[in-house]
Length: 192
Image 1: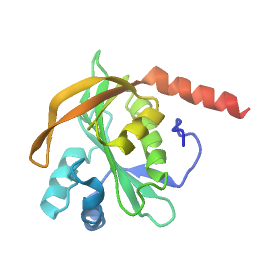
Image 2 (image 1 turned 135 degrees about the vertical axis):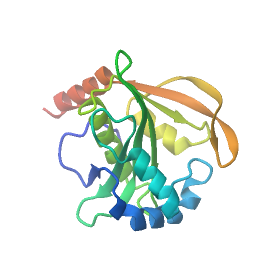
Image 3 (image 1 turned 45 degrees about the horizontal axis):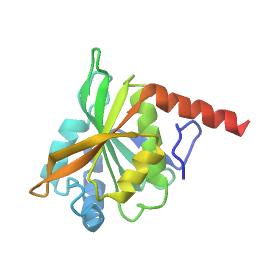
């Protein structure tokens, strides 16, 4: 599946996380521990979810962090999370992208749709110029996701992020607004 800018209604929508999401979010995080392995530690307790909500619950244009909760239309099942953090304004207009799917919907293609919608939000509403995603070298599914979305590998960051008590190397990928918009234009012209 190629990931293109989202332009038509799909089975996935995004919304900011809210206190009412706590029980479903925590249950999904706990059910996904095996899936997440050493890649990510999703908030899996009420206290950790509260910290997450405080940090990522603001969707205003001037927020430094924006959490995007992906859910399946129809039944509201949680698909995953896309977080934009370290949002820098001024001449930089950049953010870091973090994301993870929830079991049992991982691998169904819904997270790829959520990913496209999150990038539309980042380059559209937030008017970012650059989004950077850092992925552990062994995380093949995540590397495939960012590559299909058009991210370009820019390098390797040694011992970049501490996850599950260990400093882990990451591959650094980036996507620019003009690249994302060009992909959307090319896709639209192919359909004509």
